[in-house]
Length: 323
Image (cartoon, rainbow, N blue to C red; front, side, top):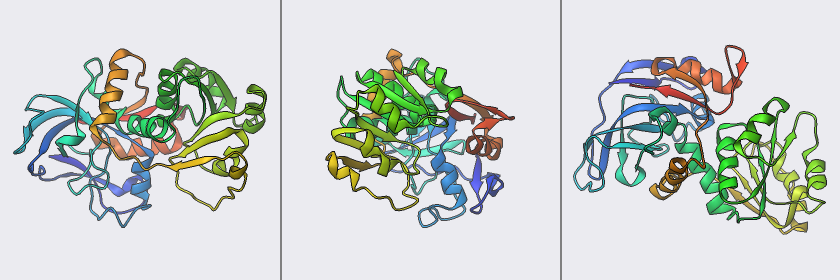
């Protein structure tokens, strides 16, 4: 099979298109012909060497799959050859990721693809959708009539998180660039803040009558953790999916009894089944900003890191057509 192999840690030129063996299917596993995959920040973090202890080289990475079951292993009961599925492969798993024509996955991680989506659309939702669900539903326990501030609403995770929060009945505030405000409002954001020209702490105070929001969802990083208590209501919750690049002072969190959660998503069928229902009902829609073929994954990485294709900014996910 054709696969994009990470030969060394470094820039986008660290990948090489190779012919490699199709992985063996074990008990309780599915062999899936990958139709589409997508690029995530986790992918370029791995590529540049952020997690060398977890990724022995050479490696096939990638964390989104939409495709067709080619073969099932012994003991599989829920799928058969020909079924369309979507899922996130086991992160740092031993059988490789989704930058390849075939992938092997435990049955427990796979879900039938939403019938109303193309494979490219389905592949654009798996990791970001699971991450948003873990953050807002499992960790933050966001309730109807509560409010949430989503940092980075125009990004891959943020664009799904806005839609999920609205589907849950929450009031959504989000930070983004001025050029992205119309886009995030189309997704359902109730209030937008241009982080390049506005102080989000002051804006949230003004918009909420100094009551603050119930939840902050951080997809950006920087000093968000230490600043979040200043926009939280009492007993508010902060969920971050970003590495802690520098130590931060959380003393202000005591004043509002803040609760902090740090998420590195673990996929499971339950999350994807719940997302599948929302996707098929139209309450969440995929957002694809750019498309590339498998052989051009290095260019796709560059596009995601720069946030632009051919000099033009885009919204949502970078997807890869595999076969």
